[in-house]
Image (cartoon, rainbow over all chains, first blue to last red; front, side):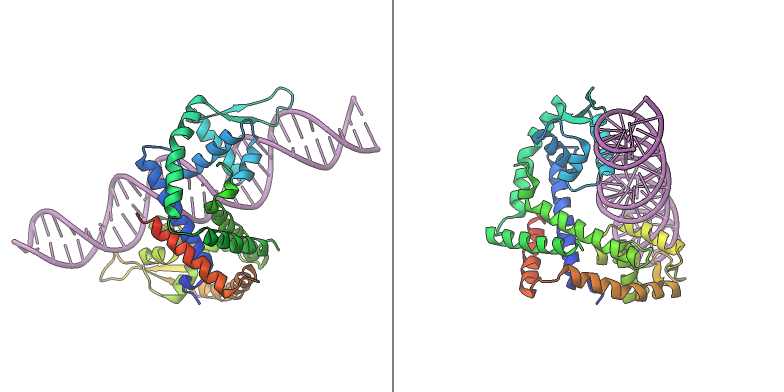
Length: 143
Length: 143
DNA sequence: CATCATCAATTGATATATCATTGTACTGTC
DNA sequence: GACAGTACAATGATATATCAATTGATGATG
């Protein structure tokens, strides 16, 4: 009963933790000082320039408060800018600085690489099945 | 490329996050003040009384430092005791207090329940496949 | 136009994750 | 028995997760 190996949720947890550590090692090895989460945020900002913080949070499945603090750090690091529009000063719009864009470009291939490696030997059908089972679990957790 | 929906790792991350929030809601709804992680640790201590902190960390796939701090809190809450053996004072042995044992007993059925619900409609074969794919990914991340 | 509801963001408080460093106490070897 | 190495834990520093409460600004309604 208490053997976590028999509880699939802990396999999931262990897997994603293992992957995150792997990803972080790769970033460090490539000389990046970004955390995996910071990279994620930068990536969203590149894809959707001008996006608001709350939306970023939704994109990366994180809390608004977490994003606010991450953006603080990214602004400090001069990778991200906050722009306050004159018409509605609530909805801050976020964007990459030149430095930020450079970092994203540098890191992109590394990320592609390690994602590919983590999936080596995993068939497309297996990925689809994984996704489907996880979606079912998420749906079950909605009640 | 930057659509996280197409990257299976973020599906995994989202799934486990969804499950953890679900689990936490259930604990709160049942009147427990434990976090999911604290419950995990208590559970290990019940299964292996006298275990050392480092081993607990291994059991629950967490860092030793995280466990040290969690145990601090659990000791404060009078759910856990640290016993320092006279012969080797390094290897602190951990155990549940009576209060701790009571909490574990109270929470156990709730946990069983929500685990079951989260897997509702998921066939045994799907769970096995999930596990197998995740194991492959973890193996790929070892290099 | 004054108040109220709402929404975006910030901040506070607490818990956890991770790495690096330090401390403390054994253990083995010579 | 002194010394080096090692094992376990504690602590510091920083980043993230989460909930609650607050602030600041806008829009809606009476």
